Image (cartoon, rainbow, N blue to C red):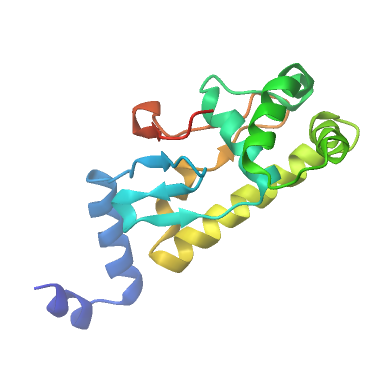
Length: 164
C-alpha cells in the first residue's frame, strides 16, 4: 500500500501524509545520561548526541532545570555549572577550568549563547543524519529572547545514570 501511494502521489503529498501520521503517534525517546556523561537516545537506535565538554555542561544544567534559565540569571548557576563542567571535562588544570566556567556564565562574553547555538546545531545534525529532525525540538535548548530557555523534553524521559 505504501509503495502504491509513493508511486501515485507527488513526493510533497507523501511527506505531508507521513508527517500527519507521525504527528498523531509521536515517539519521543528517553535521553540517558550515562556514567561517562554520554547522551544516548535508546529509543532511536542508541543515537548519541555528541557535544563538547562546555556544551555538555550547559546542556546538563538546562536538563536539571525544567523551569528554564534565562541568560541574565546564568551567573546564579555558576557553581552548579562548574560542578557539571568539572565532571565532563578531561582537563586537569584548575585555573583553566575556572576561567572556562567564568567565560560561560559572564553575559558580556556571550559565550553561553554561542554554546546554546552549537548544542542546537549538533543535536539537529545528529537527528538529520539518522532519520528526521522533527523530534529534535524536544532535545534542544529553546526559548524566546529575554525569557527563560529550557529543554522541552518531558523529564520522565530523562534517565540519569551519571552521578552528577
